[in-house]
Length: 451
Ligand code: NDP
Image 1 (tube, helix red, strand yellow):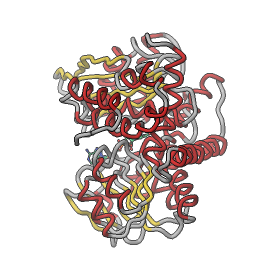
Image 2 (image 1 turned 180 degrees about the vertical axis):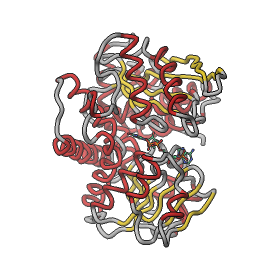
Image 3 (image 1 turned 30 degrees about the horizontal axis):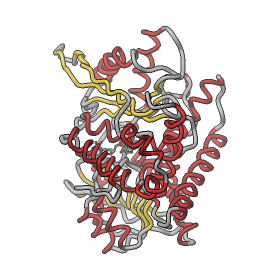
């Protein structure tokens, strides 16, 4: 996708970034989308140009890349690439997840770190943006192999992070098991017990409701968006969710609690369709307990069907919640959703819709909740985990859930109000990008140009 801008300054920054990082398509996609939203902001206030804010905000403060060597169960040495992108610390310590997936590369880590900067700003909590991970694939590995990989990964990463510097969390392929092994290794090497990671188990400093937070938050955001913009609710709606990992499972749980019926879930091999509504106990057993594949659902639940090799966007629904990975809805899939009568799309995954797909949704008047606003509940609750760790206290599930709900409702209104203020009422892509940007940019201006 080629991005063009009315504003010369934005065009110059984008062109320079595109030339410098020509082999990083995901990163350029994320930068292009945000800069397009900033046209009215930069046009209105020349200080963003005189302070070089846009030039600086698209360049990570630090990109760390390192070797991760570990020994597999056959005694063979394996080598993976490890990364931590410390993108922007203007409003707080770097904060963002660690992705373990074969597709991880500098482009993916940088796009995620860039997006995270604005998302964290939207939560109103003091967190900068960062992201990291490795091309290691935990699927099919033994617990021992995962442990040895995580220990080796942390042996290098621990030199660059800390409770007041950079606080990583989970993401694709990194759940409580991986966070536990990494935390143990950090503690061993540094001889300190601090809140250096979030997404921890409850027995050693994790927060209640962190596991549920991204999925639940997505639904709190969606419900508020439907309520305010269409005087409607999730109740009675048919819903398709992609993925069957952490975000997908807890989005399904909250959607069902709100009276919706989720009829499809997927993984990278295919999707299941259950016209009676997904039985989440079965999904949790397959994915959280047995670490199995989603096709096993169709073998266990009568009346459900598994389709190999396809994404679930052909299933008729009122609400679509992409909760798997980037660019999983392209223009063609978006047109299928529109033709099937879908009225709402809210992004649980990061950048799951291509720019062309978003254009289709907006042209056809769908309600569209962009990732950096709609899925911010995970990092917001990680921020709450950091607060509890600092205080050496644990809050109840109800307390954390109530704070999460308040934050998600506030994020919707912040994005919606900015969309009105800048003359594009209801365009939450523009509204969220501007709302997230303003706070980070202001902090950068206060702190001077050396940073
Ligand atoms: P998990 O690893 O728990 O689950 C990921 C799910 O997506 C799995 O079902 C996986 O299938 C599927 N998936 C992953 N890659 C692909 C692919 N290339 N094509 C098709 N399906 C794929 O990750 P999470 O649920 O934590 O994360 C999902 C998304 O949500 C990501 O975009 C993440 O960045 C985002 N997110 C997560 C947050 C969190 O708190 N966990 C917070 C905010 C955003 P398979 O098992 O076959 O690989």
